Picture 1 (tube, one colour):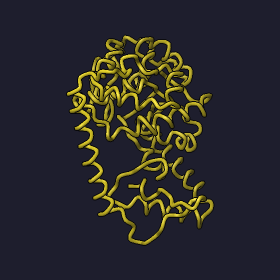
Picture 2: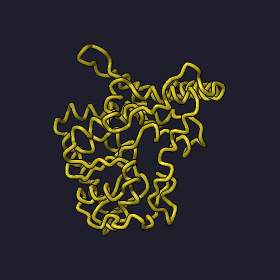
Picture 3: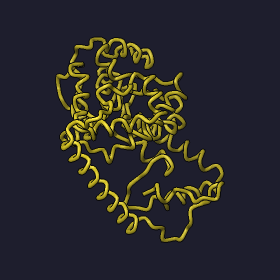
Length: 315
C-alpha cells in the first residue's frame, strides 16, 4: 500500500516513522517501555491538567502545529506525507482528534494471515507472538471501533482485494485522496522505500503487485497449538464483526478429536511457556529496579474507590 501510494508521485514517506507514538496516547491507551519512570510522567501530566485547566487544549494545539510543520518538511514538494505504523491502531481516535482534516486509510487483512506473515518475517517460521499480541487483541478491537465511528471520513481498503483487483481499490483510493495519478498502470514496478522499519520488501526493486500464493497462509496452521491459538483470537464478540469483514475462521482451523502433529504442537507450546516466564521475570525485575516512584505519590482513586491501573500499565 505504501509503495503504491508513492507511485502516484504525490506522496513522500520513510519506512515506519511511528512519530505520533511519542506524543499521542497516555498510559491508558499505550504501554511504554523506557528507562525513565513513565508513571511519574503521567502523574506530572495530571498535575498540569489539574492546575492549568487549559493545558490539554494548549498541548493538543502545540502537538498539532509542531507535527504539521514537521510533516510539511518531510513531504518536501510532495502533496502528502505518509506516516504509517501498525501500532497506530492503539491511538487511532487520538490521531483523528489531533488531525481532524487528515486523510486516514485503514488497511484490513485477515488477522490469521498477519500472524503467518509475522512468523515468517521476524521469527523464521516459529510461532512466537509475545510482542505482538496487543495487535491481535487491543489493536484489532480499537481499529474496528474507530472504523465504525469514522466510517464517513476515512477510507478502508482490504489487502486481499487490493492484490487480486488492484484497479478497484486504487480507484477508491484515488477518489478519496483526489489523486488521479495513483498507479494508473498496476503492472509498473513499485518504488523503493527508504528507512529501517517496515515491510522487508520495501527495499526491493522491480516488484509489482502479485496475488500469487495469497491463500498460502492457511498452510502454516499445521498443528493443534497453532489452531488453538487462532481460535482464541475469535472471541464471541470479535467473531461477529470479523465475519462481516469477510475474515471468518477457516474450516482448516476447526478443532478435531485427534490433535494434529501432537509433538510439534507440544514443542511450540513449551517454547511459548518458557518465553512467557522469562518475560514475566524480566518485567518484575525492571519494575523493581526502575519503576517504583521515589516520591511516594499514590495513584488517584477511581469513582468506585479502586486504585488506578496507572502503575501496572505504564511500565
